[in-house]
Image (cartoon, rainbow, N blue to C red; front, side, top):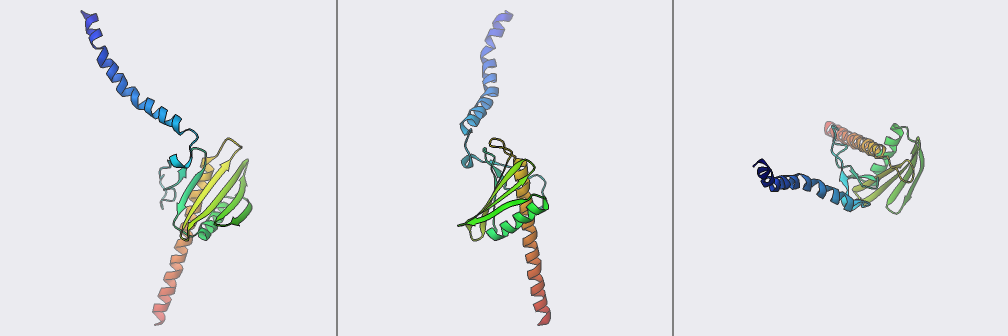
Length: 176
């Protein structure tokens, strides 16, 4: 009788197995479909304790490109990025401007760093960073840190401008 009871439980066990395995198989199939895709299927990073939210909105493509879009003019993002590279002791090898895109080349240890600053609108700019260890391997941690430091430098630049404007307003109010 015990054998018949075990046989009767087979459909229940199969259903339980399907419920547990189906999400894993679906995720694996989806991951295989995404292999080699870049921007359309970006992976968003989670914000990790940055006080100003500097790391919020940083994206990574499956190809190792790290990027973030800022609500700031391209010139401000450029100045902030150079300040970040200086603070990180990353030497700049080149800095060129063509059309609406500025390209910065830098290096750190055995990494070649390529940075593109693209003006999307007069007040919206996309910062794209790739730190390559070689043709295949990318260092997204270094790319992410460059973007985080650039975001912080941009926050500092904007805060300094706000303080300067407030002092001007206060001095005008005081003289009238």
